[in-house]
Image (cartoon, rainbow, N blue to C red; front, side):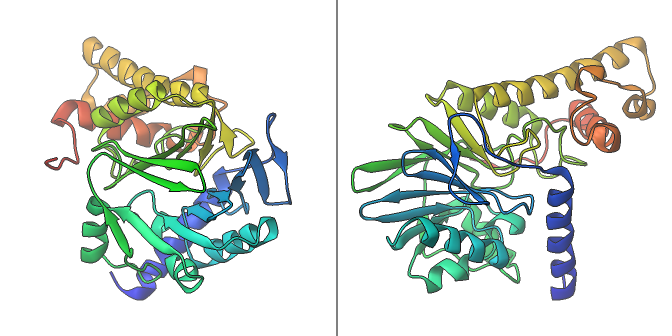
Length: 301
């Protein structure tokens, strides 16, 4: 892909995010500034209204930032952090490999932060460099890593195949807060053609996330009116997928031509969700093909 093509793709992704995401404060949190909401003591969500939300954790020994997105977003995130604390940013953590989430790291590297990502994400980044992406400084592996600063611990959970490569869910155990990228977008149907998702493993992952001990979640994307939500949002996203699967199975059982199923399936329970009219048929095509052909993509663990 050429540099101009990459720039176009990133711009389109940002535009789509802006078109389908609206964020504001939520009960249990309070706005620090127009784009910053304190989720819990020392934990903040950054929502610049570009369709992407980040999180940062302030301690007496520095700051941990999660999700740089791109250079423009990262610059705003760094400014937001400086508006809250004078502590230096020690770490920038990337959730997974995709360009539209893991770009902009140079902004934090220049500020002195160590950039980290899971080894599976980094392998992809090395093979598929993005024009606004820098390779992480530190690579972690396995299913779990903890970072502790001044008594505050942030857990990094790699849950295997689901979406992209190296997808990491972040949890603050004492504060009972998690950060979830892409795996859950409250009050929105699945993203267009559901790219780079293994549906079977995605459902497994959602069940594993629900089993974690937390009360509040910060989502990289949201259409609920807030970047901040709860376990209920995970449950609703899981139920949408299983309801869609059930509707497709019902059409198979009726003998509906597989090529007509996507345009036939309707889920009125979700018709108020963002993207329903534009994307439900695309969602149905993707999930139907997964059920017809077998789960994909797949890679050995």
